[in-house]
Image 1 (tube, one colour):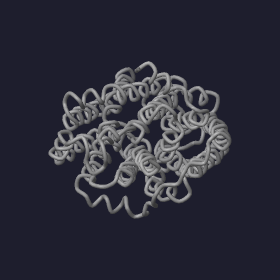
Image 2: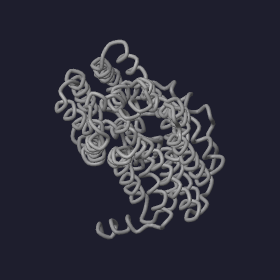
Image 3: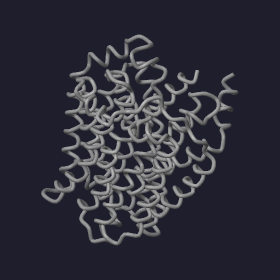
Image 4: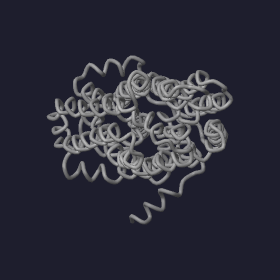
Length: 429
């Protein structure tokens, strides 16, 4: 029976693979620019703090757009939202590759963030609606695409960036254009949702202490995470290909520990203790990075090792949000995504200012302190996490088994997509 289920997971309509392939390319964008950061700084005569705005503009726009993705898709439908997001990514990725100034690239990355938010927040719903073999099979496909994209992004960025810093941007534009054409041709029109989502719902949800506690924890964690992602390439002093290899190893650990290790740790120790361990370990690694920026082998080792704890934290934090939030999952996902991406967007910019004012060690030490503070904030919600772990199989959100795609949600709203599709499926039944 398990063999048949596994076989059906991979025997899918062409439309499912078209969207899944687009997901791989979209998730590549997370680490695609890392290997070319030093080259951009050198060839465009830009300071590292200016180059860091590539992360800031992308993530801040993604954060704000997260508030409106449910509003948009509930009005124009999943397929049109998907196509709109893909088209925006194609246009702005190409414009970034054509730009001759760091300011232009930063601006076009902001447009890229808008398209990515629309695409990622909708792609899982489309896969679930179109896949055969059941809901679980669709989740496996989606998370496989995400893991492949995270791992391959830095490697592809390094290979293309070795030719020219423009290469990764044009590469994304071409691949997303192919995905856009395949989606238009192969994907049938998806049914609209049963009701429309109010634009103000995510912000109102942050009045709930449980959701606010998890969101603030995520802000502090993301501060350390995007400080590392945005600034670790500089002290390594490696070429684009070698940087791509380093972050390929890092991304591989992120994907592996998100899918394999995180659920096992949660089952054995519970959500809160597992998160304390992951966040605490990440804070220690950031501290070591800050202290060893002059020792290349130690810096690279700590960065790669951080992929393991990042993967665990990504999955468990987002799943905890879905379990403790006293609102619908789409609303909780949008509110949480908004707060944490704002923190992630501001961190690289502030880190650049710290480097200009002091030295390269300071941002990582501050990032370590922020993550350690996140452990303290999370501890104030220990009882709610313990109650969620010990709670009944079903709650106001529906069966706990429906909380799937937590890894995917770390980069764009999977529970919102899942909830809409499950609701529509129940309505049809």
